[in-house]
Length: 565
Image (cartoon, rainbow, N blue to C red; front, side, top):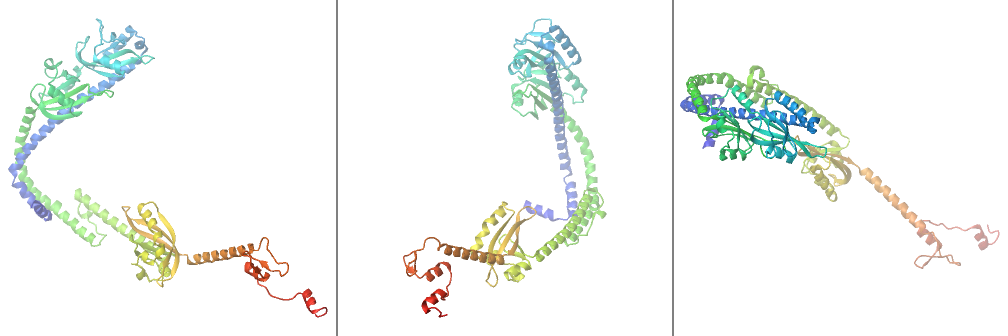
């Protein structure tokens, strides 16, 4: 039933659809206003999600930049000769200058391979060891720039997280570890400069779930672990996510978080979590809804009336013009144009596209006609037989030269299959080649075969075939060239016969070679089978020579006596 209703709606004219749409907009006005209010709520939630994402992303981006800068800094420090030679006084001066220029750092210290600090940016007032700190242990173990965990700086006394960088000697062993801690106070400065809703919070949490920094009530939360459920949802979740959940402080919030990790480390070293109170966000949406509902009610009435007016002049009339032009184009009028009367906008663009399509169709049809004319001329006037053959072997179009070869009228030959004019013994010559053509293994092939003319005579031809494909590269038909080679075949056969005769004669001549047994008395010759033959008979049989009989002068004298001549 629903499908029939949809089909009915699709069949309506554009004018009727606009009228129906206007009525539908007018009838459910109250429902539309309520729905708009729900949309406002949804938009407010989305806006809250966007705000928390922006906050989390900005803090995460800042931290990534700071971490990258810190890595570059400790890498450079690790190359200094003073550091490699453990010149504490010189190194302390360098570290103090660096710290003064970079307030984002809480402190920079350098330890020996055992973790004992021998250089510091802040005054080293007491012996300090980092042997039990994750920063030192990871850097010494992995020999790469490594992250640490929440700590209270022993010299700066600030909550922080550190990073360690191993300095390797010429043997590849750790000779020192440079540890650098961050000062998170600047995040609070950046947060206060942003225009964020009241109650917005951010938390920076280390890999153990300990809060390192927080903008609201820091003294209450910094150094404490967040709820296990809250923390594990981030650990097991994607790299970044947004959702509505209970915040660290226990109220429902719109929350977004982002994980931070070093390239060489599997687990994140920081989680940046931002949240906005849900109630504050929805209150703002309710206020917007009130003003929007009043405006929407007035706007809806005006929109219905305006839609009917604009729809007729801007849509119905212009679509009707396009429709009429399409009918003319379908009827074959390729010179029809419509863009001049439709102006701009999307329908104007559609009209110009329509005109371009009509022009391209006209040019393409002209090019196709010219190409077909050239092809037909080449086909008809070719001195050898040519034909277009369908994939099932039927002659679709043939030229006069092929008709002359096979003795058929053009109309009679077109419609026959190649199998009907091919000698049965030669049908198998085409099959493998045709299959290879269709598979794309060959571009063309040539065979010599026998055709049967209309008069049932055999004619030898040389056939060359290639495959014509359509625009989608699918096989369409074959184009074949057929040349009458009967005279050449006859000449070849005569030449082969003559060669055979010559070879036979040579064999016969060769039989007269060697030792021949001949009778001393009667001059008969014994053949290979042991029979005695007259000399003339044997030579005639084995050489093809013929004899005529006469009498020589000496024999004539002996038989008839002297002077008988």
